[in-house]
Length: 161
Image (cartoon, rainbow, N blue to C red; front, side, top):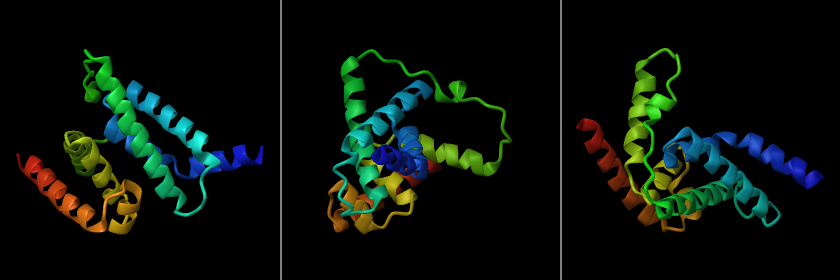
């Protein structure tokens, strides 16, 4: 029972992390909900094996990114899947501010990146250091820096278009 309560606390404390990953890797609201559930399930399965060697958020990111990649690969194998335009599904009455538009434009560009690039830039935008990103992804710190430089250039060139 204590394990369940501790798990719920961890999920509640880091829910934003899971939402951000699903926003980047899912194309529709339904896919995002499915992916969210799958990530939480995978976290629950692995919860007992968490050894506190790293920060809980590092461990959660690693599981969330690996689950998202596996989910995308499974979706690709299904074939003939036409995503509905996310802007139509998620249309809500909000105040259209410049910041909201810029954030949405950034997410639209990030969605066009490949699977690994999405994960790296998401971790970077979350404020993780190169060392933390390297620990989560398994890349060297130097490789993370190189990849981030290239990803930033890609994003800038896409936004300028």
